[in-house]
Length: 462
Image 1 (spheres, rainbow, N blue to C red):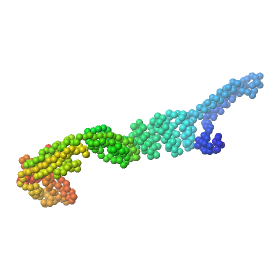
Image 2: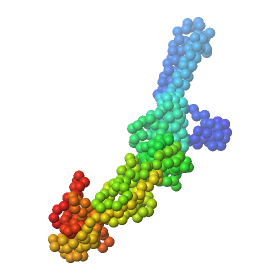
Image 3: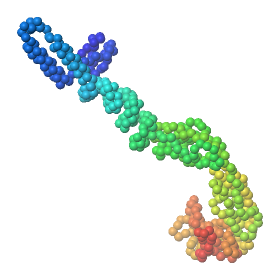
Image 4: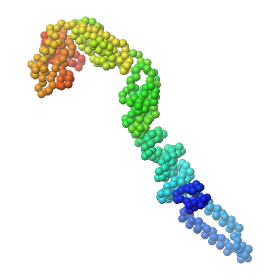
């Protein structure tokens, strides 16, 4: 076949002349059944006309010889017109176009097949299958952009079906266009499909607080899918992989925070940024209330601190200024023997602290022995009872030793005791065993000291 414009030979499967660029004017091949039907009809018309001529009287045949009667001519013209209309209707029918598309597809003439599916798409614009069939033909030719454009065209034509979304999603995954997968899932309203492809989503991080002004310290938490990572900033700058990686709650003290956070999934898809404007105007915690007051005491006792709600208390025993790295107050502290100096401070959150409270004590109790002497008596008692082998604390079957360290004085009933804590030492290991012992400060009697669940103490023989 040749180009009707320039006469160049046509290339099979091409829709335009490779020489002049003119569109091919291809006369469609008729189906065999159509040709047979047309031939039978024409033969029938011819026989009818011959019969009509025979029925004309002989005297009139000479006048009509070589000419078709007017009414016969009209009939013939009507028939030809009807036949032409029928042929035109058939070659423009969905059935005919689909046959030609399937034939071209079977013969791997994908460009021709795509052209026929394109015509079907114009014929039935509401049928999603023609969009997808044409897109598949483009894919067979490696034209992914054209295939993607057809899928998107189907979506824009309100064909938001599972077949269309799945075609586009799988095509994007083949091309490793993960950001586009996320964008498509953002448009999709089918929850089952969103769950199926959930690994490729990059949802915006969620926070346990919203924008606003707060009168207390906040511990703000960010959450997102476990597979990816969250990055954030507190100064309004766009976070990225160079931002602060979220690992633990963000403690916010007094001040203003312009938080931005985003989630990045394992495929590198970045979510939209979460933006929060938070202002903290929290009141500083009160100075800790400590009992007893500073002074000189003759009976052992405990130092107790009343802790304000949502605060933590820390203290030092050398007169220095405490901070969050100092000793945390968890339970009443035994008053040390002799002179001692305590400084307490309360924290709300990581940074907001209040005024300090100082306490100075002098504990003088009547004793017959010193803590050092009481320790020697306890060691002798433990050797006597077979708990240790010698004064170094050697143990049967162990490389380590037991040692007894003075802890604090204790008033139990009407008697004072020195309290010792048992430690296990081996090389660089030094750990408490949990056993406590009490030695009478006057008589030197040694007992095991037991802490009661109610908070008191009791004694038992070693």
